[in-house]
Amino acid sequence: MPNHRPILAPTGPAPYRRADPARAFQDALLREAEAEAALAATALELLAAHVRTPAPETAAIELRATLVSDRIHALWANPRDHRYPTPPLLWRRTPALSSEPTWLKKAERLLPAVLLGARLPLIELAGHHYTRRLLNLPAPDVASALASRIRRAFPHATALLLSLDTRPRAITVQVTDIVGPDGTSLHAIPDEHDWAAQPTQTWWRLNKGPVVRAVRHLWAHPDHRARHFQEQGHHSLMWNQGLQALVLPPTPALVGPMDS
Image (tube, rainbow, N blue to C red; front, side):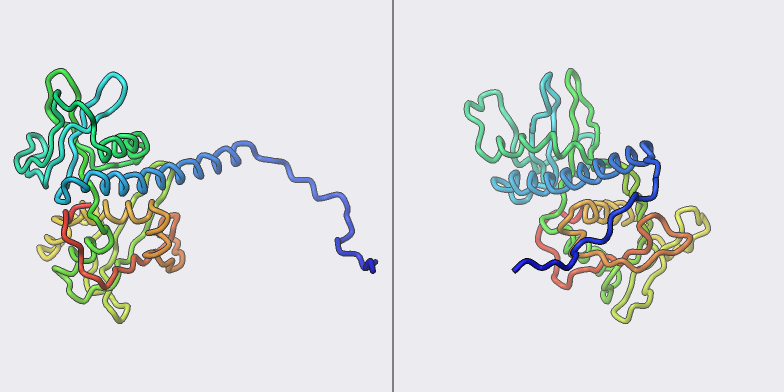
């Protein structure tokens, strides 16, 4: 039998609200930038998996620009000099390469998506008639590699306390503390503008780049963000994502490049 009870609230004229086209445009730009960052982060991990199929020790790939697109020219195992990579060279494209291996085809199809990423660890190399760039790859497990790096200096570390500013096409990271199992600070990271930092801060100066790159990658990647970040609330002096705890996994790092 039909139920004659009303299931909708009485309708009436909604309060007039003038649309703000500038605000809607900015919101759309932000969503687009977040989607591009996620696409680049996920594509970079998949690219790394493909190139490590023939050479698991690969830490960086050398790219050379052509008239059409970038191409993978060589695979390197942790080159010591980014201007002039040194052995061990793991693989190099040769003119006699008649048929491209499957892993190479898959990897090069991902390059346009990878290069959407902001602040990639991409270094220009010296070249003659072409552009050469070196792209450092993330570790096979970025979170575990980050945990291993932190625990070499602070064995009881369980998390990083940090603040994030995620403006379109940029993720700015400020790590404030290394946190222990009881939730208290094991080590306070000095502000970037604190030029009077004590000599004990040498560890952070040497490790800041790899740590910040790992945090950016984990935040941009949707799966890693959901797995490793816990919101700690907002503070008037913090950036637009407020305080975040990056929870370090308990597992040891996988064998592979530590710098992400």
